[in-house]
Image 1: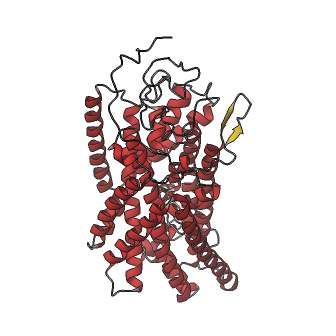
Image 2: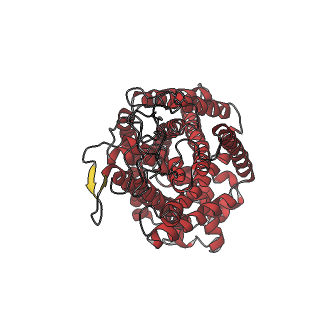
Image 3: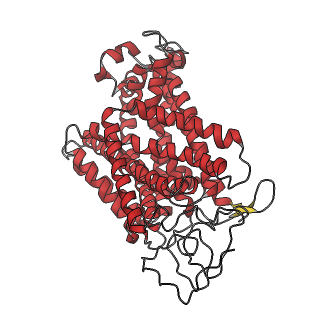
Length: 531
């Protein structure tokens, strides 16, 4: 054991803004509510026509394949949240598995997704409300939706979850009304396409594996948001927190297990809902996939046209209102996740430290900053005719790059570093490699605009990383999870007298870095094996 410096002669640490704790008040249901709100149970409505045309009519098969493809990412989240049940999500996971630099880049790229997806959702809500009340401009409705949901988030994570649960229940109720109405119409009048056509294609263009895979690359974007569940890991209720580890040999916080189960459950439930509604809508479609492909103008309202022509205008209007309300609350969940990511990055010194402050267990300043950026983007887009196209084209690449680094983190932590003992090869290598292959393939298929914006955002992130490394005097700044005494390292030594930085040994009277293990107010649950 290397003796640490004498505390009496050590230089005093620089003053840093204290990071407060997050309030632990969420249960399993609340986590699922946030995940499903962000995804939106009727997410396929807006892209149904596009996917039907791209897949030659095999739209249900597309969502089935997309669910399997995204399951790899959900599985990697479930692995890493058990290692680091903290608010930073993929930012924290990449720091654990890959190091400080990749951690910053993962958080930086995820921030692009978490800030812009809510902007798109707010804009959807504004457009839908303008269609119902055309006297009020879309940007006014958009700004109003931002203000209302931001106030709910500032009220507290538990209060927002309760209101979100009511909205989610409404969305699911509308979806169930559609499912029952569609089944009734099909039972009475039969299908307009073949009963297996949503899985095999409608025959108008012929089945094509390449066409299905191309549509899958678009459909996976409907699932973005389930990952936000991991951002609330530090706010899971401590009730029943301790649980025996599988195989004995210590105990592990039960909260991380609940988060892991919520991620997997949310993806599975969303996949089931997506497949069911796309299957029934395809059977009700009044036009063929070839006609949709020939006339792109028919693709946007295709789902609504199928509902109106088969069931009636009343269901068309009900679905439209549900989408308007649901979009605003999808943005609420996204804004909450963005606030937690900003909070976590600030706590580790990657963003201004003041953003790591909390009030009554809520990171209000981080939430306000995230809301301000989202408001600016949403209102800018709402005031332009092409604003929605610009936003939609760039929201995806950030999340997909972050997902790729997430998969690499699983390999880094379990296989390369072997911090949890001998790896399980199918779980810690095969699954994440397949998941990374999926996300990279989707990035390659993304639009040129999205790739350019993603590359520019990445370049800015690399610039921030280089500037911070220069300021800190090297690549391993404070909070490095890979240094001696790392919390996740079995048998990490505790050196009397050493400074108390994250991952370092414990020192009587030493400095307390916000966000590190030595800060009882800001640290997440102990994640050492056996803790």
